[in-house]
Image 1 (tube, helix red, strand yellow):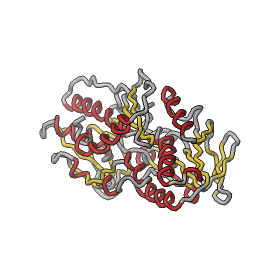
Image 2 (tube, rainbow, N blue to C red; image 1 turned 120 degrees about the vertical axis):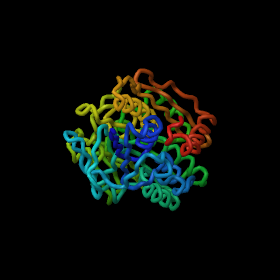
Image 3 (tube, helix red, strand yellow; image 1 turned 90 degrees about the vertical axis):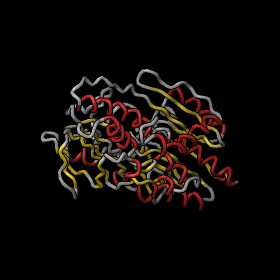
Image 4 (cartoon, rainbow, N blue to C red; image 1 turned 45 degrees about the vertical axis):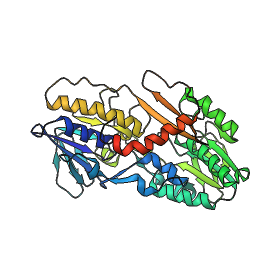
Length: 377
């Protein structure tokens, strides 16, 4: 019997484990999923926690309840991958042997890499961070809020500009928008990461008096002076700093010598096999694939990986390819939003800002638990 080990119980890891359990017979493969906490967290909901629209408890479920019964769940931390001997070493448990290994470990927040970050910045990239930001917003009575990112790449590229829109909506509802200046600092040559969508976001910013500066790559933070400076030589003062924290790849990938300088897993963008080891697959945020680091990408990638692992186990030709497909919804506030679908060959078209776009995001949030982890969509 073959052994398949999946590291990471996020959206990508959960989908691939469930699809393998559905498609492979019990006598064909043993499927094991290793997750450090045993809790499945819906990360797109973090921003709604920050703005008081979502109870954080609603974003967490037991991973065991989302998995098919034949998937073995191991709650432990993978600390070393030995591709030569096909083994995964765990912090507390036994060494796991594998015939195929799937790495769906996500990205790692590393705020300590930017001095002053912990003392100065707010963020919504974890449940705890989102709750702290909510408290800070509730007590904020006016001044300048600077929104920016510490470094690239980072998870969910549209999220910072989406947060700027949510700040505008939040303080408008609170009745103090005239006392709050929102200034968005982009590290790119435009406000929004995707060029075809940028004019749409620029119009939103202009309509709602959200100021912006491009080519601002953070170099340092001075918590005492409440100022953030860029490599390009500009400095902005702030009363609140909302900054996406620095990211790196998964620690076990880095510690096992499988990552690049940022700890990202070098992965072939079509087959999703790692470039150094064809029996190891990469899914989602932990890889260096040239698509947005998001659950939406991991969702589509997981199905390709499941197809390929099934083919490998059965000794068949693996033909599944990932075309770079991503579907993304953005909430612009005021019950308006937009959606984007794109892939390697087809950039997104400029989307309309509409109630329909906003409803689409709410429906995705509501339907996630019933549809996505099980691979039903």
